[in-house]
Length: 100
Image (cartoon, rainbow, N blue to C red; front, side):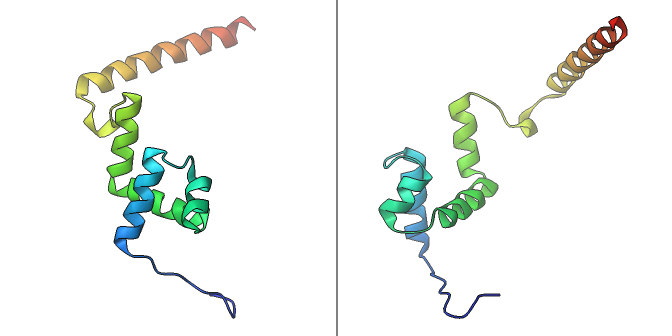
């Protein structure tokens, strides 16, 4: 519940998108610099970023930049390969523990 005198601002969708685009592009620097430029709370921007990631747009941009694929796009063969790697690593760790 809000304390007495606390004010909640309401921002338009256009403004939110403008701020998010400025953040994504790095135009003003990081989140804190974007917040300072637009004179809004860094936490507010973080909330918008989090919501944007849940919708998938920002998340997809990040995966594209890093050259990674989302786990939902992995094939059955990819999962089998990961499973085999984990089994080999577990065997390696077991052998290391038995040496001690």
